[in-house]
Length: 598
Ligand SMILES: [Zn+2]
Image (cartoon, rainbow, N blue to C red):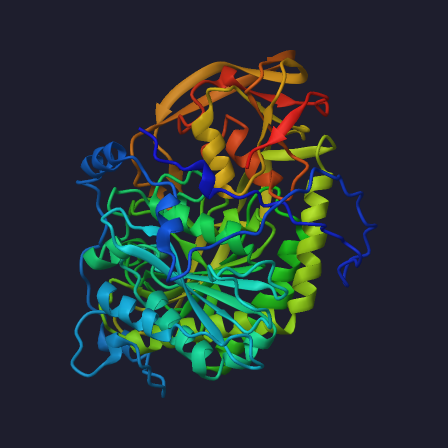
């Protein structure tokens, strides 16, 4: 049973993309642009008054939800409750601010509920009608959670263009920043902070930034998890490992926002464990208000990293410091007490941070110190998130023109690499040592612990292959095609049969296993199949109706992540591509007649 709806996908090729200016900091020559058919239609997003489009978002088949819910019923999520010593608590005093989210109303227990959030978001909607300095706030329906809770986002814009009757913004002139909170339901500060940011954009201190940027906010990406105070989605799938596979409606909703708005900057707000296994491993507790990391993944364009560091992270560090907040690279560790390794955030193309990087956007994970704390220090945790996110918005506004140029340049650069050079199929972080500042669990005094540290700042290539012109997929691989298109990739269907010159894969070893990240095994629906492959030069017998995914497009690196079969994130590993023999690498530009899928 598939309920994907092809009509909900729009081709994402930019109309008349003209790259006329090099990114200011670039000394590289302009790469050749590879032209493709450029018919396109504006992306249309359902507005509050027209929610019909929302139901067209692909959803996970009910059977899969039930099966994975059963599989994950015994999965551990919340750590055992712990309490801070007075010494530790004293390190995190309340800041002198007040916020007006429902959670901070006098006498309110817990956090802002899904119903309260919905009422608040609907109350912020307004139509500025294109008037100067008038902000339009639009409600975006992007599907429903697995238990049927609407997934709603807000778009803030001062674009001086009349709004279409559907509420869609066609080809906005200003770059979009996308802010996402609570992919993990037990990390509430991100969602509370995004309510604050939404209020300040609508009619507060942040409103003037809308003269330079548009902002889309999805404050609660996992409402089912939030309602249950649980990390995972209702089916047991970790939403923040689902951005390439798109098995959950929640991750599909985020992919829809990325397809429609093509944000140049994305923030993914989380919280990290204030206790976790650190007392057992190091007799110490984490000490930082904010842990931060941008995309670190194979094939990431170098300019995206450079912009992330220089234009965004450096100002963010300064701003956090100026507000009396401490910060470090994001890190985590497994639950195994014997495993003393600490790792920066993972390097797989599965998290929102990394998948968004492969969309050629600047992408930040921002984590406040909150899991396991209940409401303790909530004001400071929200303040930390608001401070970091405000810094990102200000940097994006200050660099709006640069970010547009950067996106145009990098999109063209990625597309121009098709059929040329090499690409990285798998990479790993660099083992090193790190002096990690922590806290004495009793006194709260600083305590530096030297740890084995997997650094994601420098990746080592494990597997490198020639970059193909594209990938061929058999006519029966419709599930893979739908997911690639949901990511925003352009897929073409062969109108005629013919031969494609390339390589096929043969499996040399097969191993049923589980999927891992730097925390350990990933809560997931069912196991995976790891394959080892050999590549064999071949003339591929391509039938009419089979598919071609060219790498001469801006999202090419997502196709590589999904379609090279022998990686932990691939569509073969996750049985979305049903047989390695039903896909192939195409090494010469096809001369067959093909039609882009609409
Ligand atoms: Zn999280």
